[in-house]
Length: 635
Image (cartoon, rainbow, N blue to C red; front, side, top):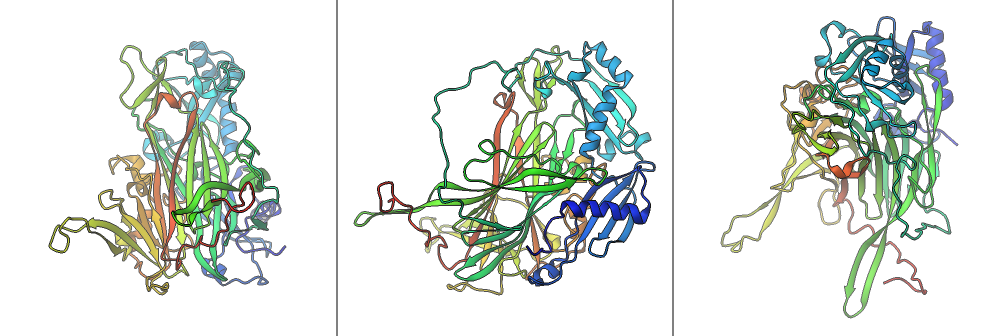
């Protein structure tokens, strides 16, 4: 099968990239690979590429040297078997890795000072202990260690070998570690609020409750197989086509999303992904003041992706896609069943009952592309859904285990959390997700319109005050890039192609329907906001540049200020009738609940992209009636 320029790197290409860099640069064992990914060809080049054209393969690798803590970027020409460039990037820290996560845990559990501090608290079985490293914001790092690859660590322990790891935090005891050398720099012993008895188990065995027994089986079957096809990385289903990609940081990426409109293939999006996730814990206590995670930029959603299982994570007639990544030596490994592809019934698509002729109804089918990631205590479940009526939905579900902390029984729980168990509270926190939406509506010359609804005043023409109109305002340049949701006007945004018209003479567009828009509730001069001011607005609009991928900067680990969005818009580029990118900030404002304990039911947020004048009428009018149970059609 022929290759496509956007195909993700394969196992051999990861191995080849590491080998070429070692061969040409003489890298020794002090060097580690933070990331290797496809260096995507320029968008203009991909758009002009045709099957049969040559495919040049290039990899981008980020490495650091543990001896001097310096970071380098290597571009490797895989087709030419050579290093194309080798560039020092001073003053930055690459993301932390899963290898280091395990190494810090093992080294700190074996350290005599940590063993002694735990023994003072009555914890002596180190096999039940986990020491979990977190990254720092530079402003919160101790001054004397700001030149190091620095981590701070929570300490947890299980009640039993099979017990819930996150049920028993060791409150008031933190480890500060040089992640390069695994040197214990500080053991911060602030307080000891004890080890309250909590009811925190959820796995059968430690959890001794009784399961429900009154559900009958629910089977999802497609006797004739699935309706979609997957050839190489190209997925097609019900007039939709797109390419699937995967990388260490964003996880799944959807490329070249298009719709076959009665024989004409029409572009909708060039590239869709989640580009950042910022999770600040809104509790100023010793245990939590450092706890702001950039789960995508500091760890990588791809690296956190887990294998999916039929009947548990995905239900029905399933096709799986594996993903290939690498460890810090550059050695590739495969995540089996990283992406799940399947169809779902979703109730009624459209219906009307005519009292003379009866009912006409169509069932709704949707194509689902899903991926799950485990980021320490949290699980993030990502679903891209495509509908027969041209709608696109992105849904994120958060589940897993909350971070909890014992509180001082004398002073009581802080106001910045919810008591969930005996002498235990869960701090409030937020999850800000940033979707990168590179829409190309009928081509890449588009304008973003901000649309507000408003009621006209009572007048002779509007005597009952019923008239509502909309006002569309173009986002003309990057000085106006930051936009906010307005509930009073039910604000939305449309990506419009001003060079095309539909049959009624209006411009085709796709509309961003915002939901789960949450405010930052954060002083703009605080360290965590200065690192990611992107979370301060609902929508950002930028002119497309191939290298503008990371809205909080390419290297947010140990960052002090933004190197992403605010830098990009500083040149105030024009945004009308050009190639634009929409950045949508949405998420979960998690005011923790007792019902989230000991394991969270999935908290669900989503947004939609909906055709608005893109089609000449309801594009799902041609969906066939479903067969009736007793012959004929259902109605």
